[in-house]
Image 1: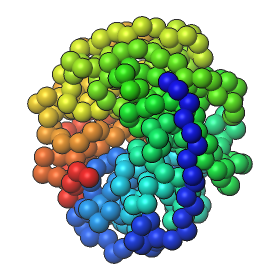
Image 2: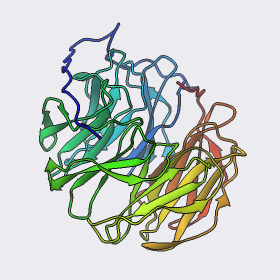
Image 3: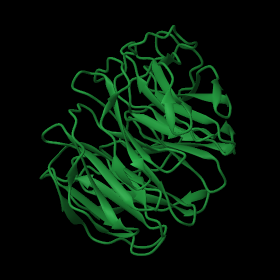
Length: 365
């Protein structure tokens, strides 16, 4: 991949026609979301889900107590065109990043841990993919996205919890949104599909700063990369191949070199989600050709995989996965009725509930 020219940062300060509107709308019981595209945990352990409404605004719903109970849908306003990304600041406050109607990056953040939200603010840029957010070893958030030149661009907090750099280019020619993982030593590593349909990656040369050149990991991808981290700290990446099966590749040692590609079978019709169980075992989720949710998991931490198993349901979106305060995984997806549905482990590491509806009328963007 070759280096690309810098693009012009477009720092836009207002709103309605080309950017984001501020303020919260009155909450309808059936929230019109596009998908359950981002889920994370508050500082107190309560899960919170974010998605794009049919009005183009950001909508969210949250657990009313750790591990259980859900609020009604509420709007955070704004207008955006790509899947949102959510990160958690060093002080525990959630921060959400979106690409606005002006193709710039916008963000909104909790004014205190666990609740209260700022107005929208613009961070400029010219972006053509959904953003991805990582957290540096020192706690500073860093955001990555594909630019109009098909290169990777990033910007970062200048101090934990506050202040932002300008945009900087990391070169490359990428054809998907980026995905970001954090190595065992704290260095961020970014993955994306190249123009050759192979997986490419770039990484920090030291925790918190400095970047390598791009390097290829081979393969033939038809999805955005899902990045997980094993219990022993080794990164592992998962993609859908040209045959719609699941493929994975992993670091041979923490922070180190990579294995070749290996197939895990399956017949997938969407992108992937990966999460760590309470005992550290990775588990991967994807929509099957039958529109049910399927999963496969490590049989022991750091290695060995089960066969595929169905979790049933009829879903029409990619899956978002979060982990409850007690360690139980919880899944979110759009159903065939366009409502938001969820399913959760009945105990940490094992056992699943039936699907249950969280309402809403979800449509694809």
